[in-house]
Length: 148
Length: 83
Image (tube, rainbow over all chains, first blue to last red; front, top):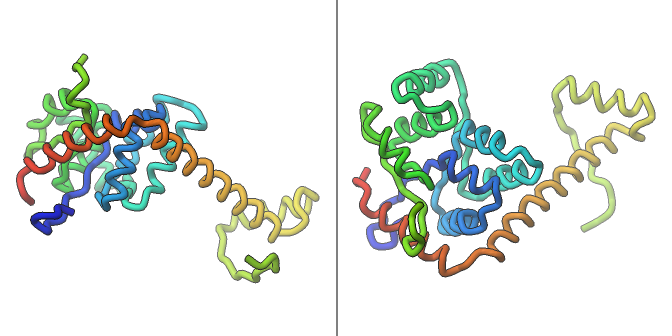
């Protein structure tokens, strides 16, 4: 919630890079996420991004961390619910060439008109014009740290 | 909290009910209630472990770095087109 305008902030769509950071026990990203959760900021977790993160790390700790992400008070998993959503995801994959993990993030962000929270802004900038409406991106970065 | 057992009426999937009864029949559990108790206890332990991992991350993180990152996120969020 914005304190000055009273407007409700849109949910942030957590992408694969953020989910992987959580699965790898990145304390800065996890603390940032907890900070937003404490503020009441809604977070949407596309289920395939969680799948991709679990696949990336493959440890019991990683899966516990991802379950902990889901258990935050203002986090909600976006499932792949039915054939219509499955077909929509397939269409996003076909248009963007993204992996299913990222394409699910794009599909959710596109449908909900919400920004993608990411550690990999260049990848999303590359694809932001692939869909009918531009994707909005919020990058997690420390401005004091040099970029790779 | 009282140690007295609470009586619950619950509805479970048929395959889970069948498995709980199988555990009792084969002597792996004293009762279906014990199976439910064990499952809930395991869930409590798992959730406690998850919370501990997240708490540890917050304790290890550099607060100044996290504050800079949040300010960076907030600045981008403020610049987004209004919905």
